[in-house]
Image (cartoon, rainbow, N blue to C red):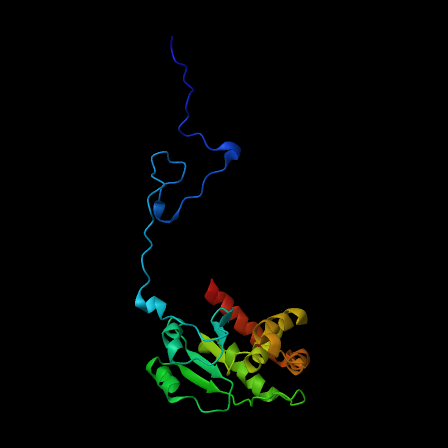
Amino acid sequence: MTEGRRSTKPNQQPAGGQQMCRTLGGVATAFDRHVDMSSKVVVPAKSSDELNLIPPSNFAMVDNGIFRSGFPDSANFSFLQTLNLSSIIYLCPEPYPDANTEFLKSNGIKLFQFGIESYKDPFVSIPEDTIREALRIVLDVRNHPVLIHCNRGKHRTGCLVGCLRKLQRWCLSSVFDEYQRFAAAKARVSDQRFMELFDVSSFKASAENAWSCIQIIRT
């Protein structure tokens, strides 16, 4: 009596034509019948340099070559070096700390300071001319990569980024949503009102040129 055998097709795929995704490094798939699935995968430990890459508070990428954050301190310097910054836009009136100034000098980073006073009074107006000057620095691709920061990276930085978003033709609801994500419970109606009324018409030509240059850099 002969024993019946089922025919095998070594190249047959699972039902539905789906294939199991392969793991990183070319490791065999789970469908490979010769793989010992009980073996452990050894993950290399991170180097001390990688563990020291701590971004500043409220750090985020705004656009290609444009970043935002709260005030960076010495613990963030290693991370900032990975950005290869050309310039920093500082929106506070207080002098830049000596340690930060030395970091800028040693890394060839330019500092643009626009002293906007911190305020909590909802009736205090934001200096529009100062925001306009800072926005011109942001639009100049020669200053990229650039980091924009104030103290917490919420209000002053949020207003400048919000005005930039208007130049990028974001709708107001999206501008406000982004502002509120960073400001959270500290969101101010006066900031949002300022962004709503900010006139970008005088920037349109320069903005279009700036963003076309950024698109060329991207490609």
